[in-house]
Image 1 (cartoon, rainbow, N blue to C red):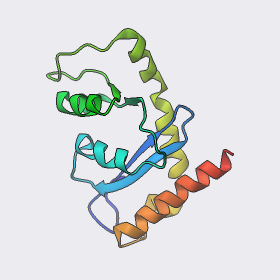
Image 2 (cartoon, rainbow, N blue to C red):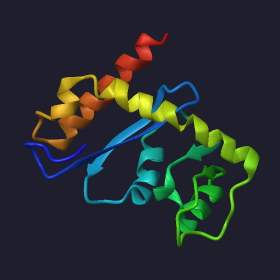
Image 3 (cartoon, helix red, strand yellow):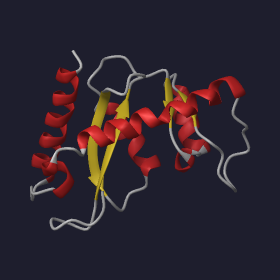
Length: 143
């Protein structure tokens, strides 16, 4: 989310389902890489069942992350970055990557709330509470 008045940076991590509705949301320090935050985000999900597939951008191309998710029964779908893993994604599963815009739409819905965009809260727990409240608002609007 970038530099705010309350700190250098805060990362907002979220997982959306196939309709773009939030399944999980968490926050972390802005200095950490997204690959290291995937497990934390999966643990913070609102549902009991883990997702079958996880779609991410080029930053998620990591052999270690792919092996960790495969042990949990989750398929990682991400484009290959230069110098990244040697795997080549299957064409059928990689077509799902086109639906990544639904996650971006979830972030657009969340950041409609000025309180989340500006981050007025000093404490991270309070900010996380407002993020979860924003997710709840999105879920209630789509009932």
